[in-house]
Image (cartoon, rainbow, N blue to C red; front, side, top):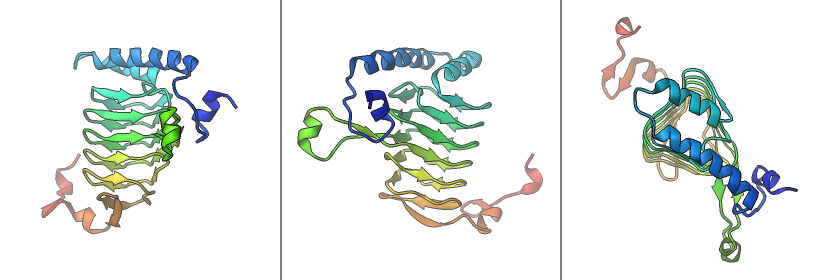
Length: 204
């Protein structure tokens, strides 16, 4: 099995492989270009993201700075995904994000991990496990998602949560470790924030 194959199969490997690092730095240089764009250079940003990401749908917007181990090369975004400042994608293997999902500022999605055994860490070994996030999710500010996690559709993750277990669809989950608080329900069709009612007549 090659080093690249090990990267995507949850096998232990050495990430300082010369061939891997040469390719990785190429994507990081292009990510540097993206982060240096002006706020008005929207077309340039869109073109760079299409070059960098494995897949990116129409209508996506990522607010620089974006941080990514592989510049987004192993990231798959659906359409109309929004990310606020400082999204960090440890994309040593694949990250999948569904349509209409939103990320608050300072969210971290990590696919890379290191073994507990100190002798292996000393030698620099790493493993990666894919992360999957469904459609129409809202990942609150400062959330950390660890390797191997799956989050279903229509999920809200509260700000500052650390997601260490899979989260089912149509739920609100919060905390460290992140846990399901409740399902999204009829109350949420009437109120959008505390006692603030949704005025459907005023919505477009």
